[in-house]
Length: 246
Image (tube, rainbow, N blue to C red):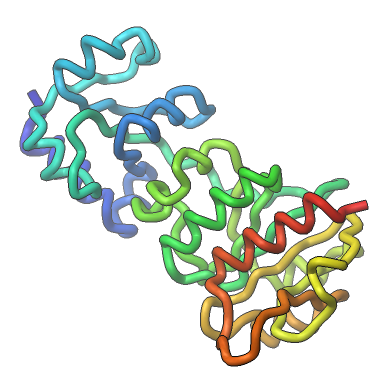
């Protein structure tokens, strides 16, 4: 059964400080763990109930430590309010910046809310935009709330952090930015390779990044509403990208 030290280590990974020290993170729940097993992430540990181990043992990669725990113990160390089956500890990947090549790359300028970041990653995966670059101020990719909100999509995207001013200072690609006023996203012709920038939840795209934007796009709405949630806006933009790109 799981020891106190093992439980303490897994619980500590809910905090960025300890995730950074250990270079590990946690995936909660059956769906996320099964997605992780099929991915190219390195599994360090699987913690599960005996019944889950009996039914899913064939899925476990060889050499991965499997630790038994009761449902109560799992719920105590999980970031889920209820986790009755399984969680896994994975190794973080080195920070690498996705290259634009001939693709569309999603760029996140200071997305602070972990739930928003997770939902954005999930939407990007759905629409096939699997290269994402984020500013250093953006929420931690390995935050449990981010990982859980992706519903497994974290395994299928290339994600890296970098200074966006440096990124855009060294590119000839188009930079599409989302603003309250700009070309109607429902009519805009997306031509790649290009970066698509989503701004901060409250402040939008920062002035430092705005000066690199070559095309301003907007989502028309009814007067009176202040703005759209960043994750919702991303989904709308990517939906139109998938329909209107050249």
